[in-house]
Image (cartoon, rainbow, N blue to C red; front, side):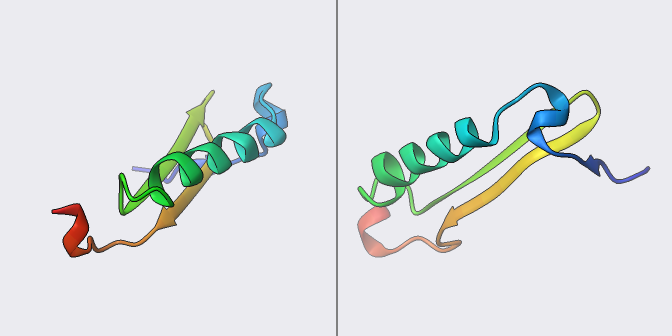
Amino acid sequence: MLAPTPASPESAGMSKAGFDRLEQHIRQRYVDAGRFPGTQLLVYRRGKVVHSTVQGSPTSSARHR
């Protein structure tokens, strides 16, 4: 199986600025607020990965149990 091809959001009709706002919202509302220890966001469109980010920590602390 072939790995997905990366591409810019704009090449798939999407906005990098929109993804930046979405990441900020997720980080503030969920990660920084302690609701989730971390998040991963992957957007795949028209056969290409147009956005991929990971925020927070891969391990949960005692407050998330």
